[in-house]
Amino acid sequence: MAKTQLNVRVDEGTARAARERALERGMSVNRYIEELVRQDTGEVGHTFVDAASDFMKQYGDVFAEEFGADREGARDTFRDGSREGRR
Image: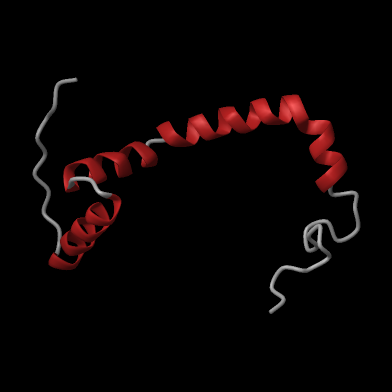
């Protein structure tokens, strides 16, 4: 794929954060920025939505039975009986 060069001006804090995040992920700053743009434009999001849709088509009934909203407290209670936010 052909590449195009972009020159972007950012403040030093943003540049430092981009360098640190890229280093943490083991990639170049160019690659890191490129991935951020791809995520923002929805390439990753579309893949996730498609996979979630396929999952629900295959396992929707089982999922609804296990986690459905018709269960009292379904949003707050986990399988082990613990609740969100409890410490």
